[in-house]
Length: 105
Image (cartoon, rainbow, N blue to C red; front, top):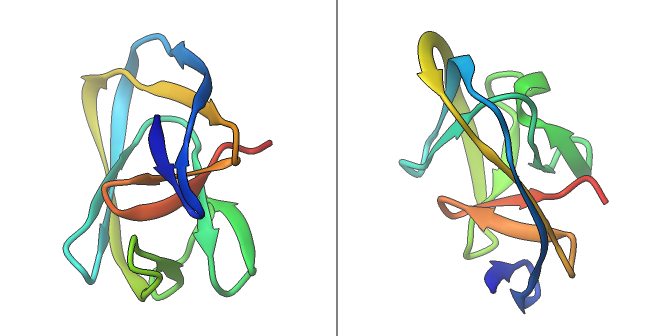
């Protein structure tokens, strides 16, 4: 069980992805850092929908766990060996490091 936008939600599917040679760190004004490998959608206030974080522009806004607006300050891609997981939840939403994300369902 993870926390979704409307409360606790069950993980219905989890896939461990293979190794990657890079990681992108996205820094928000509330101190949250999302480490991304591949593409993961997060709620974007400008789009009023979930948008791949890798497609966000600096200055765009998301939502934190308290439903407060947060701003993307910068994104940095570095070469380093990393891995990731992809998850799907019953509600289609979850929080990663306090930032509202979705599972593309």
